[in-house]
Image (cartoon, rainbow, N blue to C red; front, side):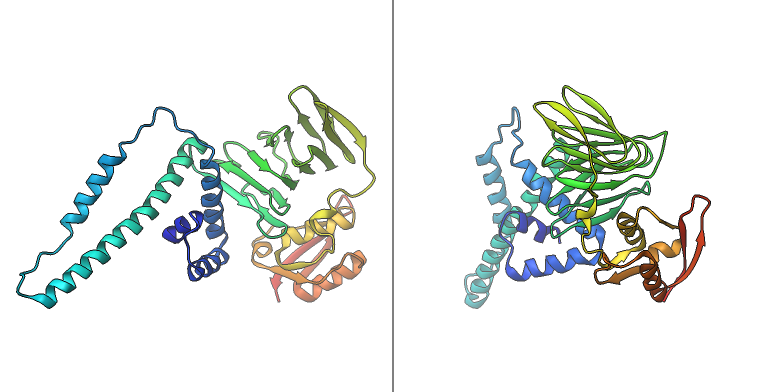
Length: 330
């Protein structure tokens, strides 16, 4: 698959190879992440200008041709059929070697780009087609708008919680007072301990749903609370009150397609004032939910729909929320 990935980023993959690559991407989140990393590194490497790098192309070509020459098989001149076969084999070997060299070169460029651009291995999550949901190692959740991406280095959730954002995303951050959650986009840096909010890097807007959020620009700093947003304009962060639900963009119809329960409950809370609480257990990750649009349904009706999909226990919490505990998938 690395060879096909290399050919894809160079624009040399055949239609059958692209189909095979597309199927491979859908097999697991790990495959999708590797594909995203290759694509982004390849695009970013176009902007990298090496310093004091003067390769000897003629010497490299001569060395490669010498290797190809060593691969030839010499046959007695009297064995005509064998000689013809040997020549064809040599041509095939040469063509394969050059094609293979191109793939290896592409992979090498991606590796060099990774070293210079990231220093150590990073995880990259992108939303290529539609909005994408992702759960992070620290328990936080992200909804990425189409065409957006996030990247973070190894150690996330343990050594740091630093994320690079390109585009627009909604964050539901798991609280950790010892490890702040920091988001860097082109013009703004957003820092929180645990809250939910939207960062629109395309328009330099941060909108808060719950909790407190610190927003820093090159020349200004503000602290936002629930139902406030800031917009960077003329290098100043202006705060305004918001009455609309600025998170509805991530699932306007409240529909799901084989979605994890953490996403389902979070999206329902977006429409119903954070009334549900999902108990943390192993079944929550094993069970998924599919449904048509439920945005016009009452919360009671939605809970009845969930009951038909899961072995569900319902109780009340001390703070007045409805607690959902998944006993088993049906």
